[in-house]
Image (cartoon, rainbow, N blue to C red; front, side):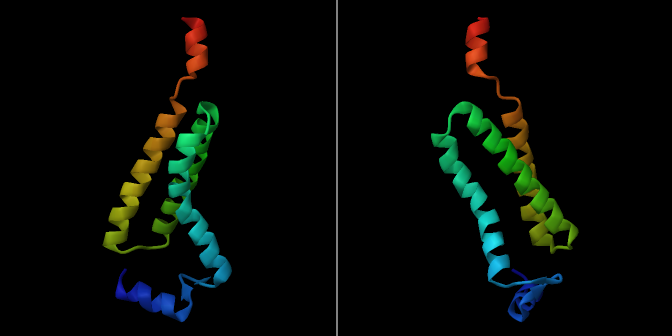
Length: 107
């Protein structure tokens, strides 16, 4: 974290957004999407897993692009670019999944 970002956080406002309990809870929930998807990918059936990956990946991509548009440091751009590329790949990969039951019936 840069010194400027840390200073802004300590004031309680970053880019015009109040850093209160509600904001921090919302950001925490966004951050937990990735770890929840690790668990869900193991326990959901194929169809639900596919849609969960598409939805979660889309949310993460949109949020990361939005944070980049607010202005960012070089190191943040680096990490955000990797996260955007990864989440876009997850969405693309899940979108292309073939329904195994339909494939078996057609064979």
